[in-house]
Image (cartoon, rainbow, N blue to C red; front, side, top):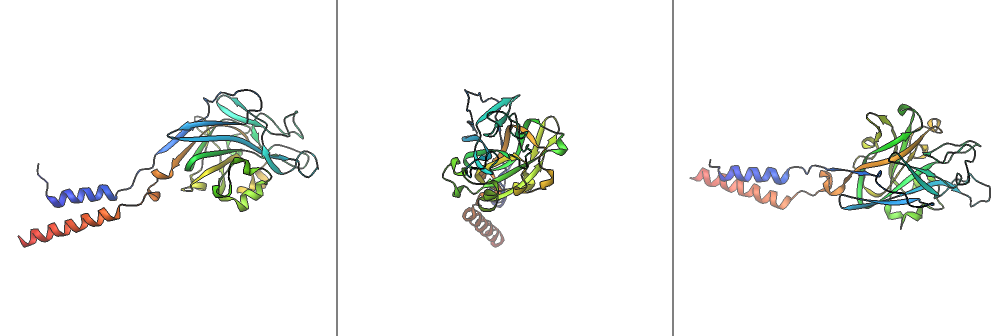
Length: 267
């Protein structure tokens, strides 16, 4: 079967100018093995990049007013159950304080304050989060919300830069985009982030229980708890909006098509 020069060039033009399909990668945290006490971070490698996952909560006591200060510090320990990770923050390390709970990432607490537990995901390259999965949640799915935030990684030299800040500091001065997401239950617990973080890329992401400084209603807080088992994300290199079109080659092919048609008419 013969094809004209114009047909072949048109096919090439369509191939060059067509979109690059985004490829979603899933990182499963269930295969990580806990080693020892004070295990508050771990690494996962997938699809050519590395993710460092660490636990953080607003429990630091710099002002001398006892436990319950709203300044962020690392969680003491991460625990795994059924493939999902919980955290024990510094208020919970010697037993629960004011009804906080050390076997989930949660916003539980009485005594006039809540501890907000968050996982910080540090990626070796920029990604956009698509969803997160959980092995357990504290309440029914329709009553459980999580917060997600893309941090401005230019503001941080490393993950320890979260120390001595508050969640409100991060929300107002160091966040590119944030929102809350509803936990769903269909063959497992999960939440989709496409509404809140669509095509937002960063190397630093927070996933935690509902904290209204990142979006949502403060009246919904206080009953959210989960164990994080994995995330799905897109690399920026796979996003059609992030890949420059080959304009030079496209214009060259258009010129060749024009010349071919002109020559055919003269003949």
